[in-house]
Length: 61
Image (cartoon, rainbow, N blue to C red):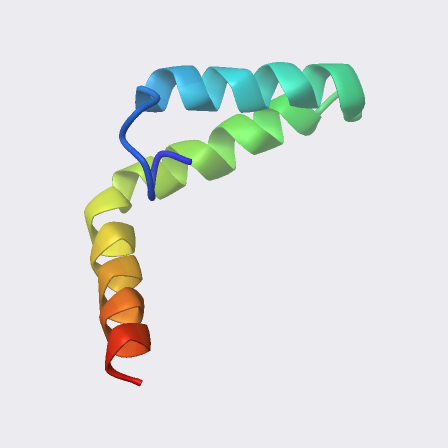
């Protein structure tokens, strides 16, 4: 969500995912989700560039 759309603030999107993990996951799921998404945020610019490149490739095809 945060890599594609900027409508939802990053911290809010991560918090929502962590809360869902608490409800539906195991005891450690929320920590895992928080860690994975936190790492993705560190690479947010690279992710956006990769998505843009893929979208441009689709348009050219």
